[in-house]
Image (cartoon, rainbow, N blue to C red):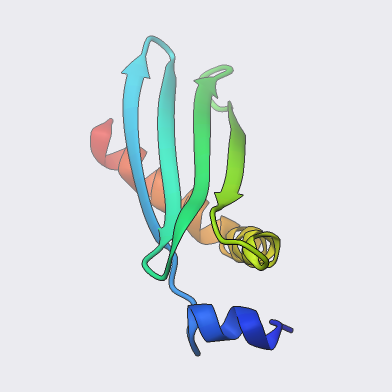
Length: 104
């Protein structure tokens, strides 16, 4: 449940924008992603590493920082963003796989 003051900021639908950049270095890809909203400043900055372990397996690791610059409700917006990222994790993995297949 989203508190009324937060829903007044994000509106009836909460849309997050995701942009990512990847570069290949040897047997691994390094990426940087930014998730943000058009309705407030701040967002989630994520460093991503995809490293080949062998011919069949790889390791995907994430490290990020979440920051919403809005007095009084910033923490609530941060929680909302973190929840949305968790809910859409499988879609994000599928998008990464599609990208890597096109780049291979």
